[in-house]
Image 1 (cartoon, rainbow, N blue to C red):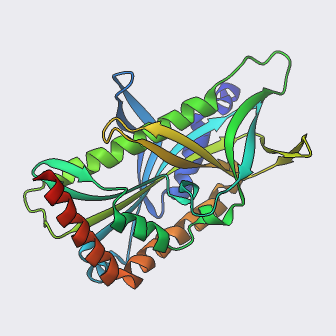
Image 2 (cartoon, rainbow, N blue to C red):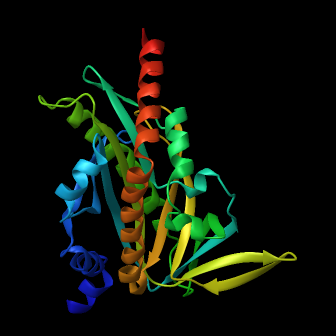
Amino acid sequence: MIGKIKESGYPLEIEVSNVLDKNYSLFNNAYYFDTETRQHRNIDIHASPIDRKEKYYEKRLAPFILRTEIAIECKKSDTHAWVFFTRPCEIGSEYTLAGGAIHGEFKSSVPVTEPYTDSFEWWLLEIPNLHYSKFERIAISYDEIKKKKDGSQRREIFEAVQQLVKFTSYEIHESLLRRSKLPDLNPEEELIFYLFPVLVFDGDIFEVTFDSGEPKLEKRSHILLDTSYRCPYCEEVESFTVDIVHRAYFKEFMKILEADFQGLRKAIIKHHDELLKRAKEAKIRKRTELE
């Protein structure tokens, strides 16, 4: 019985949750609706940092509201190694974006999201160097290689990544929608929402590169994976960067992510006036287009 429990993914989910318990509000088996399959689904962990200095920063950030959250899927395998094929990162490309980033405004009860306005593009250029920028390479493809002859073919990476991007799209959309229905919503507020998708794996992770046509294999504890998904809410194909993190590296990874959270907050404060000016200009343009 104990052996069967250890083989399942649940101990890993609990271990990851225990790491987050002290400084995060956790939702295990967090709900989302899959618009493709028309089914109700759950993601392993949805976490929001508990900000003990929120009141201090609230005045300095206003009218901006910064939300930084994490979506996590947990997987384990003794029979398959995860292999990622990487390419050089393109400087200034969408590879440097967070998994989900939305700057939203509202008109009536319908959220109007503006991830590609001039103001938001400017913000992306001015944000601090998030941990994505520290990587010289990013995975564009992957495979699950059998370590034993009797191992069956698996698609856990694909399924987990799909879960993450679908949850990210759903949660951002629903958060904007819920917020737009608040009776005391301040129309001057500007929401900036980052949702970081993370896949934690208890097993072997390898990076494959090619040198003069020959594959080179190296064991890794952290890899970036680029993927795309057509958001059913904004009807745009969006690029996502998913962190693939080994179980043993997860605590260290969270320190890196927490530095990103602080960096985003400091960047808003540093560029506050210019960001507010451009956000207002974007609102005016959007309303003019809708008239």
